[in-house]
Amino acid sequence: MIRICSTEDVPKGTVISADVDGTPIALVHGEDGEFYAAYDECSHAAVALSEGEVEGCSLECWLHGSRFDLRTGEPTGLPATEPVPVYPVEVRDGDIYVSLTPSNGVTR
Image: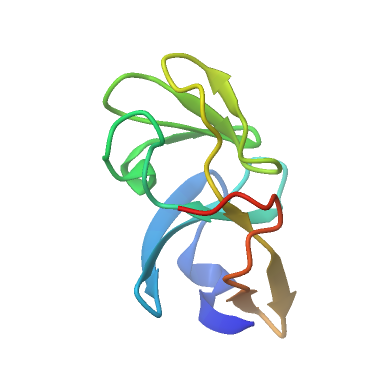
């Protein structure tokens, strides 16, 4: 697990971009209060998901409107049809840690 930032750096309903050992990560504070990490690139078009909108437990790509479930990485809205990698997140003592081993088995 690699420390990304403090929980205070990611207000509920927002997303930030982080580079973790060369891997672009979209770190999301879901509207459910949980933290999620996904590969920071839409599987439909090579644009940063961290520039998109958080809706509940999903992240919407700003370019074409593809949506991804942050728990599974699965697309929940077209035009994307391929999942994105999602990563385990752990919160310890107010800090957010991410593992770079995808929890859904999807690699990029």
